[in-house]
Length: 197
Image (cartoon, rainbow, N blue to C red; front, side, top):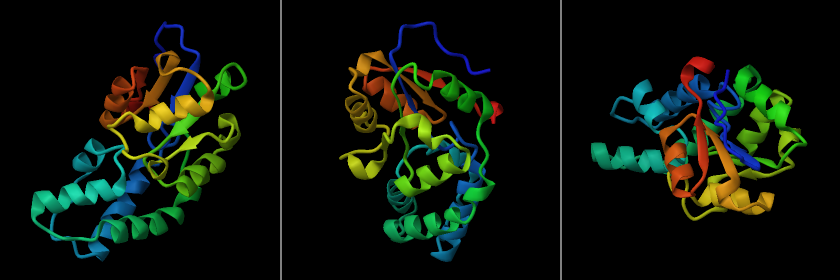
């Protein structure tokens, strides 16, 4: 069960990876393969990967470069990782409690998706699980804003496109950066634990 807070929200913003769909293990697999391909000399642990959930991939590489004094190309890693992940999309399953909640709210209020992944990846994962039609084509990704999560920009743009003020939005998220972004946007939020996947 997804614990929905008893508050009067009027719109919902969902994260995608790890929230609507159980794609995180496959994203991790693609991350490791891309970093190995680009000869990254540092370990990329699962714990570190989950700690950066929702953060734009190029920004993660920049953080790793700073931390390890390396100069791996952020765009090259992100692009190759995306190519690898695309081949895995047919294996991505929905996170049933979250997907069921989204289906139950369809037509009752505006809903959108705000994800740190590229738009074609988000659309692919949602389409593979017959969820894309729920969101009226409101898919917000880092390319559309100045700053990705944990900044509030993506959620504020989602609210604007849904035609509602930020304070009536409920954010459904599995990553700390997304929770921080929701708080910064003045929105209520629900955390999706890994145990729901």
